Length: 446
Image (cartoon, rainbow, N blue to C red; front, top):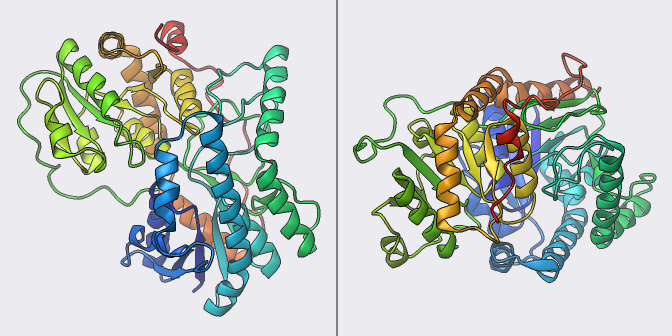
């Protein structure tokens, strides 16, 4: 049996999927330990994995609160710059700390979040097998794919490819500080020409929470790229969570995730839209709203800090979401169509893929009004193709293997030390398999 070290950014959206994989591996007799800054210990369920704090000097207790505040309020280039500085310093801390910590713990292999470059660097430094996991959108570049932090449509034309090249040039410029950290440790450890976060991915296996039908068409994904679907524990047994009685109206679920749950202005527009369109609204704000703010929402919605999301979504007709990958995948697994209102990071790119697949619409937050949002929610509810497309993705997710397939891949990498190739070497992605051009082109509200 093996001892796996799990390395991820200290955010719930990245740690929770890894916890599911760690728990699955421990159920199979292995040992799993998360290595992270000490503040992240509260995110790691001790029943699923152990925890070892690192970086006490550079990332002491209390450090993470400032990082989360900056991420929750990101706006404009200056705000993004602060977050990218945090990212660079975190990678520097991990690179300094991981080799010694892994040796002390007797780690046999590493499971690395794709967005934390230091995990791949440390694995190479130690000569350990490792697997990369794309808990967010995959970072793997292809000429026909827009950068994963843009909300651009898929466009394989010459103009689209040129647009993408320009986008990647801008992305590389923004990431130059982080690239410098990566290059420094690669040179110091004689690892060869490693200059970017993509260079740090595992050559043995790369796991993605997406499925092919949800992503844009991938023509050049490595044979070791495995879209296994959401990394989740088995669905809870027994009766679904008890909600207040349905009153005959369609049910709409609204969530902005754990980082953006304090955006009361957006929640107010969502509540007003629900009242206008005539749906029963359930809100989960992740602890971001005060009880007074929650009580101020129009239309008497059902408001929670947290809910068992997958169970609630099984009783939902439409979801209004910020476009975070985990919540979007949970909704699609329940065959729920989505109105996506991206806020930051890769959420616009996720919303663009959602629209491309025909399972929802993307709206721009900047010009969003309650009336405009109500029109989009009504459009999704009235148009059967959205639920058909969401159901098609639900079937693909159910067949993708999920956390069990991911654990099989991790075990095979450890057992053989050789690349694990996909079962079918075929182009991946929906290839424009959108049911109905008009829903796919719904991009915003003026």
